Image (cartoon, rainbow, N blue to C red):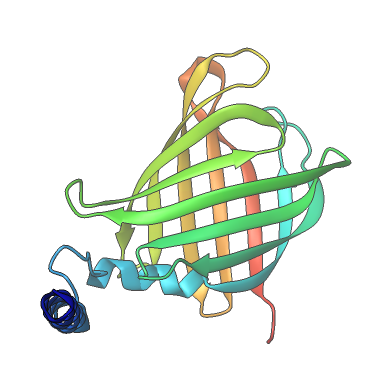
Length: 192
């Protein structure tokens, strides 16, 4: 009886070792379902790092701009599909924090993003296209005004001046539905 139990345990142990070896071999190769970054995702690498920001905000159409400073820190999530941005600065003399995500949707063939910050309880969702000839990303963002609760569509423009400088603009609907530049951020990459 004792010998039979030992044989069963030995066989179970051997079967377990075989299963572990088979599983280890299967995981040595990357599973098919792992999504790889495309050439479009390469553009996201341009934003990685820490950037000093000079922000101009025009609170209403035709108003004088308010200027402030900030810092944006960007990193790619492992796998390279998503860029995560964190902005720290001030708006209207108040501390301001914003967090965004940007990726590329291969079905829509657009760059997609989200934005949340300390000045609104509403999520902003953006879609954009990149023109490599002009190094410009243009698109729209769907949001909701925190005060009026009305939804809006903003126009977004991001220009890559060179490897260490970029400019972002946000144009909001104004009088008669015509868009006006509400925000401009000049970014300069911070040296390592």
